Amino acid sequence: MTAPAISRFPVPEIKDMPADIAERILAVQEKSGFVPNVFLVLAHRPEEFRAFFAYHDALMEKPGDITKAEREMIVVATSNANQCQYCVVAHGAILRIRAKNPLIADQVAINYRKADLTPRQMAMLDFAMKVSARAQEVGDADFALLKGHGFSDEDIWDIAAIAAFFGMSNRLANVTSMRPNDEFYNLGR
Figure 1 (tube, helix red, strand yellow):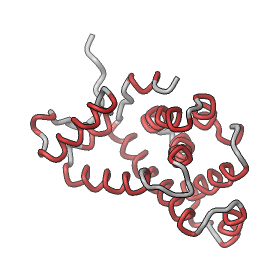
Figure 2 (cartoon, rainbow, N blue to C red; figure 1 turned 90 degrees about the horizontal axis):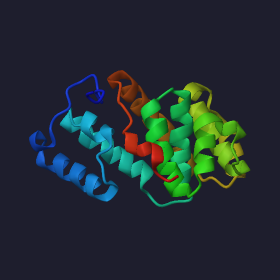
Figure 3 (cartoon, rainbow, N blue to C red; figure 1 turned 90 degrees about the vertical axis):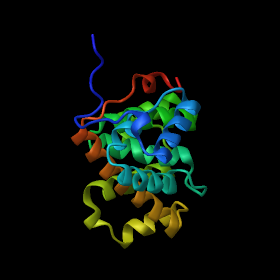
Figure 4 (cartoon, helix red, strand yellow; figure 1 turned 180 degrees about the vertical axis):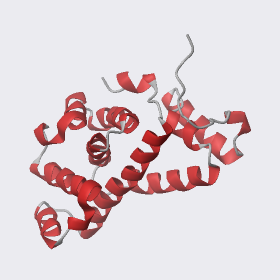
């Protein structure tokens, strides 16, 4: 039996990719033990690959008052709302690892409103969901609520940017029919 396709679009071989992209993918493979399909699927369009991962890294790898685990919570919750199987599975695995808590990752993946979150995290995810689905309704009251939980203007920008970026990512993953790697399902458990 052949493995299901990881994309509706052509997926280039690593040997045929531009050197910088191939190097990045091989570095990820060395670190994680496999190549997440998102790297292979997006390599179909090298300029967009570079832009995507530059913005991804700027949002997700930066230090700050929003932890890396909380950033992953935003991705998992909004990806669930956008019905993005790839991002819920992949970022759920990353959340399990970063939070060191498989329970919270699974709770957020199913329904963050019933998850064992702090009030601060709940406010963060409520805002991220609003940005994801109804950004036109964001107003001063939303900022006041988040500031009451200790978020700065820069933190609020980060929450909004992560929700918006992954809204785009979720749509691409769904259109391409990006398949989650089997390896993600057991990570962090």
